[in-house]
Amino acid sequence: MKIRLLPLTILSGVLWCSTPAGWGQTPPVAGNRNALAIEALGRLKGMDLEANPALKAKVLKVLESTRGTPDFVRIVQDFNLAGQNAGLLELALAHPREETGIEALRLILASHDVAVVTAALGNTNTAVRMAEALGNTGEKEVVPMLLPLVEDGHQDLAARKQAVRSLAQIQSGATELLSLAAADKLPTELKFTATTELNQVRWPELKAKAGEVLPLPQGRNTEALPPVTELLKRTGDPGQGSKVFERPDVGCNNCHRVNDRGTDLGPALSEIGTKLGKDALYEAILEPSSGIAFGFEAWTLELNSGDEAYGLIVSETADELTLKNVKGIPSRIKKSDIAKRQQMKLSLMPAGLQQAMSTQDLVDLVEYLATLKKPAK
Image (tube, rainbow, N blue to C red; front, side, top):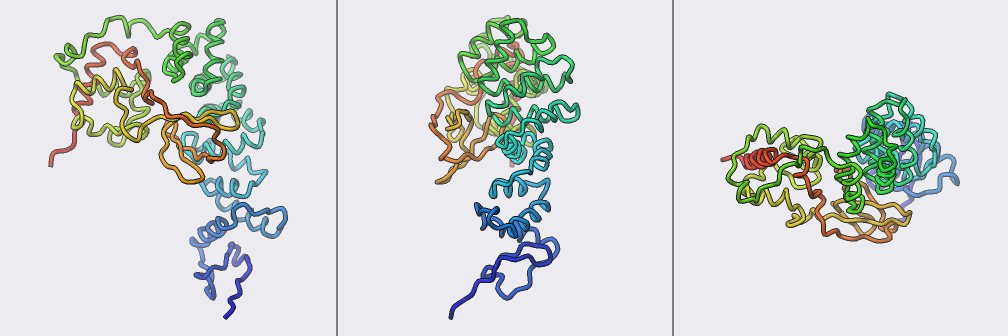
């Protein structure tokens, strides 16, 4: 018997794709309709909508119902829909640290609509979030968008500081900041932020230059660090160590999670005191590249576009991989867009963290980490 497939249609305002499960059935109603429509669109990924105006109208109708959700980004990507930057901007500003927001902003950048980005950077209500999202894309084309914010003393200071943090995440951006500092053109009110960020960058030559042009504040590294055998004899304050862990200039919680606090990038530390003794904790802090945990190796990807991506490969298929950057934000990258990838010998955790701490800070931090143990049964 020959089975005839029903055509794609709209029933009760919802996209309905005829599949074996749907033959002879009445389309679901209410809350299930949108989910069904989105699922149906997934099967039509890549279709040329310009050649099928009726289908395009249906796709746009479903798209509007997904506004403000990750599905909105996916549909725009799957069908290469133009004219959707307003909805993408909403997502980028609402989720500047999450994959949905970052992918939305990348679509805006790919459309070369600089005006919408510039407008958001010039708006006091959105400037900080836009500057943060731009940095999280990791794309070098955002550097000329952020630099004017750094140099404009009339702009909101919080936004300008965020622009510095974002520029420091991108090699060309960090280079520009150091050039401004070397020429004594970096605004005074931004020097502390730039010093903190640039002395932690992962590019050795830039980090070395930052140490010369913007050295870390005196007083945090004035005393010679005793050998570990001497440090082990000292007793720290775990309460103070918890504060050191969360201090921005030390930044442990930027990469590690303790229970429900911190960032899920490096190994979780909720039970690290059970796994490592104090001697191993000191070594992990002072020489982070001496023992990189399996699965937490850093990779550098050179893309065909000339951009660079850096982070942990958290998943991989035949066609794409997911890379989590140093802020814990995942990005899906097509393998066809990768020119070269290289596993790094250095840990994602920066060396030299002790330079931001006094000896007592370091002892307190290790004392705190040693208390993080698996609950007794």
